[in-house]
Image: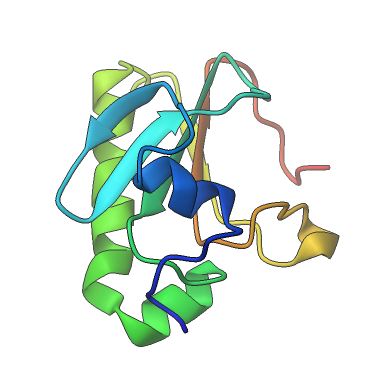
Length: 119
């Protein structure tokens, strides 16, 4: 069921403390941690503690938590001191867009040139 932890979800297991992660921020509703396969010098994932398969599902079901994810992404930018050099916040949705873990999450990317349009 949406919102409930999923036993087979990597990010739910990180939230539960069952899988280690390099956590850089945590709030009552979110966890932010370094990506294990970084695509930029700064690559942090910000996830809601509740399980929803993608950003649109999260926003439809729990818009206040979707806002928390974006707020925490902004705090990661400040903590990492990349606000002046530029950064990108990305929500991949679906396998065709590169989503590999089907738990809503934002990628915070910075520290190198980020061309548009991306790959």
